[in-house]
Length: 380
Image 1 (cartoon, one colour):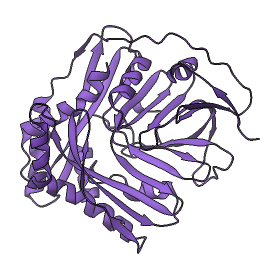
Image 2: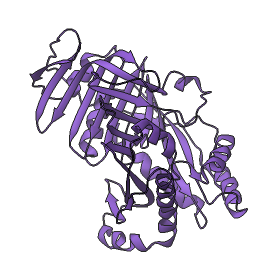
Image 3: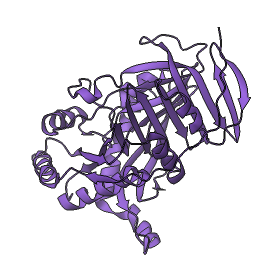
C-alpha cells in the first residue's frame, strides 16, 4: 500500500502540528528549497539497512554520544521513523499525504504567546573551569580544538506553548533549518544553520560551518568585511574543512572544495565552505563517517570527545547531533541540532556551545554562546 494524497489549504501549517497534539510528530523546514514537512503518528520504525521503498519521507535522528544517562533524553534519538500522515508545502502548494484514512484538518486559532520566564542557570564559573581544562589539553598538544557546551535551564510561569515557539522560529530564522520532534510530552526544537551532510543521487555534500562573530547592527558591514581575515576564526574554520575533505578522500577520488563565504543570520555571522564528492554509499553511512565534525566535537575527534564526555556535566542528547529527512530513495539531508532546546512542561533546557582553539578567550567565548542562545530566547 502506498500513500494517497489530496490538496489542502491551511492558514498556518502549524494547524496540522496542533491537530495531532497527543501523537508523536516531527517538523522540518528546509530553507534551500523552501520546503516544509510535518509528519504525525508513528507508522513504522526501520531496522538498520532496511529499505525505505514506498515510504514517502522518513525522519532519522541520533544522539550526540552513543550512551544516554540523563532520563530526560532516554527515549530520544537513534531511530528512523515513518509517519502515517504528512503535511507537505512547497511553492505555496500544500498537500496532505495519508497512509490509511484521510483526515480533515481545521483552521483554528494559533495564539502568539509571550512567555514570562526566568533563566535559572548561573554557570559562568562552571564554564570557566571547563574552558580552562580544555585550554590545558590544547596547550599540551593533545587536541587543537574542542567545542564545549552549556545547558541553560529556563523556567516559564506557564506551560510552554511549542506552536508559538515554532511559529516564531519559522518567522525569525528564514535562512535556517527549523525542526521539532515531539515525543511523550517533550519537544526538541530549534533553528540550525548547519548542514552535516546531504545526498543527491551519487553526490554527497557537506558544509564546514565554524568561525563566528556577533552581528553589530551599528557597524555590521565594516565588521563583516574584516571577518574573512580574522586569524583565529579562519584557523578554527580550516580545521573543519580539512576534516571533511580528509573524510571524503577516504571514499572518493572526486572531492571539490568551494569558496569560503559568510553565512549571515539574525544575530551572527559564520564562515561557511561547501565540500562535495561523488560516492554511492548511503546517506546514513555518510552521517556515521562525518559525525561529529570538529565544528561540533573537536579535533582530533575521538580524543576531543573523550575529553568532553569526561568534563561536561550535562547530557547533550540530541543537541549538536544529526537529525534529518530522507525520501524513499535514501536521498535527503541531515543537519546538526544546534540553536536548540528540549521543552517539557514549563521548563526549557536550551543548549549552546562554542569552539575553543589556541588564542580563544574565556569571556568572549561565553558571550558567543549567549548570542547563540538568543535563537531560543527570542522565540519565547
